[in-house]
Length: 173
Ligand SMILES: CC(C)(COP(=O)(O)OP(=O)(O)OC[C@H]1O[C@@H](n2cnc3c(N)ncnc32)[C@H](O)[C@@H]1OP(=O)(O)O)[C@@H](O)C(=O)NCCC(=O)NCCS
View 1 (tube, rainbow, N blue to C red):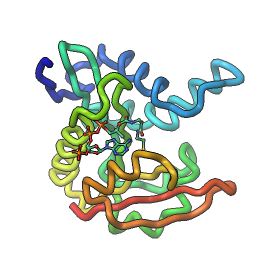
View 2: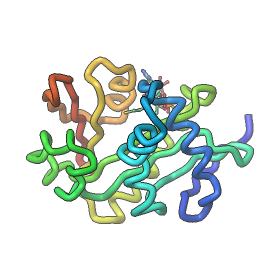
View 3: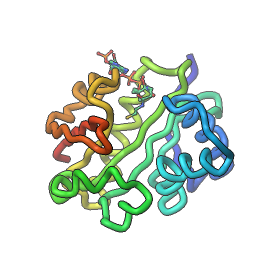
């Protein structure tokens, strides 16, 4: 297997299309009523981070193909709630676990340590940005909960947004 190299979207902007393919492949939502809805979904969970801070969107490249990405921000300002409303229910958590991340690996590349490598490099970036803690938000029943637990995202807060349970997992950096 060839080596995995971590780069970022600011250095390789032409790789955004491959990041987008992985985003939609990994998404549990597959049906969109219109192209506008598809674009809104993309902006809410990926575009909002990639557009404002592409240098914080890490990409894992294998044979120059994107096999995974990890993006986010070093803090969670209230201005984000308008675009990503579910963040607001965890507002009291952001002083301690302010940075956040989003990660996906292509289906063919999972379980090979790429996700672990991306998260470790992203956490280093967040420390350099001055973040003291980081969180992810997922479904309490998702398989990926085990992945984050392995990486010591041990602080757990379970809440509901529009009757859907959401789990925040936090880690001190
Ligand atoms: C979750 C995800 C990013 C993890 O990346 P990955 O490259 O597959 O994970 P790694 O190979 O680095 O795994 C690290 C450890 O976590 C475990 N792990 C990884 N994914 C797991 C999963 N879905 N369920 C349970 N354990 C998992 C691995 O077994 C490994 O443990 P080990 O070192 O003891 O073998 C990736 O599997 C993925 O994109 N999944 C689908 C989409 C998703 O859930 N995204 C996150 C949304 S919040």
